[in-house]
Length: 167
Image (tube, rainbow, N blue to C red):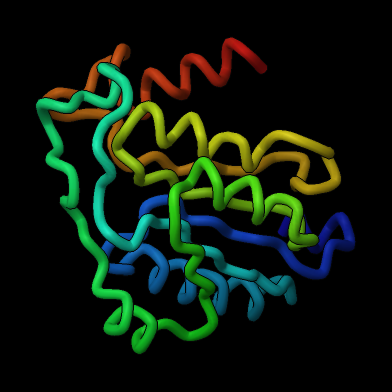
């Protein structure tokens, strides 16, 4: 509705941490409803390594919780289920930078499901740069905020606090 009110014909919806793809499929259903209700096109982009969790690079990644390669993607099976979402595979530190300069529609939504502090900090770079690349408000969903091992000092919550302090 915000995009339609601003005269923006299309937005980008991002998911960081795709794994099996259920989140991308849910975004596709939501995008179809948004188009029907407001006329706004929604371009969906899913970012993932494709090979599961990378090795942790920071103690705030809570390396005692998640083993490298957890959440490995079956790329062929996922691509067969998708209806227009685009997968962007590789290290988020590299892929988000490349994607950000690609001339995409303004970002209107981001789902973060990267678990790690370090990966979430890299994904936040999607919000940096020219304001025209974003709607005035970008709702963000974070999957791993509470539960065993996640505290104010680990994972996504630590990344959110650091990002907010810097911005």
